[in-house]
Length: 119
Image (tube, rainbow, N blue to C red):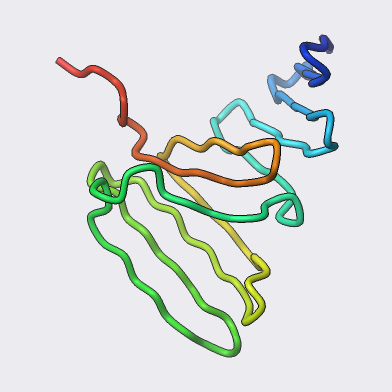
């Protein structure tokens, strides 16, 4: 296991390849060797899309007191989440997307290839 700190953020690289980041505010993000990432939902204050023109489809369904959002990007990436009537995020899943989480807990998603030069 390897640990280091940069600007108050602690980084840990575990023997199995898992990486854990803990911000000065106590937010924790874990990335597994297969690329899957997890973060505690109580740390997410809002969810946004970097560039709305990258959305291929968007579906909104209201069911049993939850609002379900399903976003598919033009490159096939997907973000799905549900929130209750007060806006509390109940579940969140993302696959094949870029994700950025601010110090304030704002999660921003974009196409995986966004901003990358392809030839």
